[in-house]
Length: 289
Image (tube, rainbow, N blue to C red; front, side, top):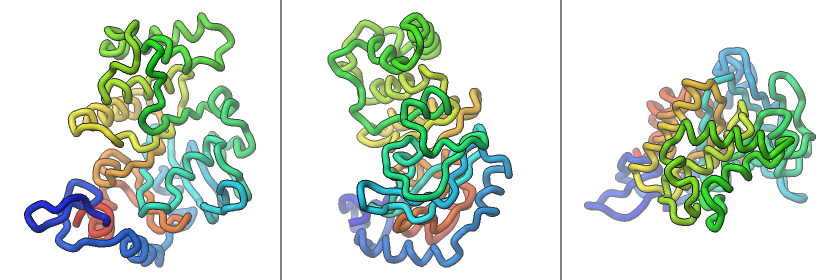
């Protein structure tokens, strides 16, 4: 089902809204395909990125092994902007992030950062030389290592341990919550603290682009708000570019400057986050009515 549990005869939808009609996953996918009738072109996507994209994807065809998941994806996001990818299950949202970071088989198209083609770079080179960091879904911390040791793991590509330690100290200066727990095992942290550690570890290499996969998954509402506040500061105060996949479409679009709706491995719709929030079709399918 597209919604959650029954509550007073109504069904919770993908976001925090309410839906009077229950849609199956297949129904959502089928109706979402209808949104693709006015699929955005490259010019429209570039305009959403203020005509000055930091990250561009051009006709990307990618997948895993012989399986093609993305069928000619275009994407554009500017410096200091946040882009949120939403869509039905299996649409290829996480595969976009995987492809940017080098986790998929690229069969066609190009990925550029600041105009430089990074398509064929390894994940390590994308982190060290192209300034792209990937923040995995939950449970990517090393629970038996201390908070400090986890942070130092984020600097594994630095030339010296001293550089990694200096970067870790900058993180501790920024987030006292982590500094107070620097010698504790990461496994004892709360869900929100673990997510803060995952984000902070990605910052050790000082990336300009953050790929964020499902930041709210598994978190209580109070921790979800905390995580999005952290991401907001990284965007607003440090001009980090964020490309995000978020299961809570309402929360993701409220945060994002730009939203894309993916269906069957293609971009079906794109617009400003606020515009997609106000779109009744998007609301019906992904925001709970």
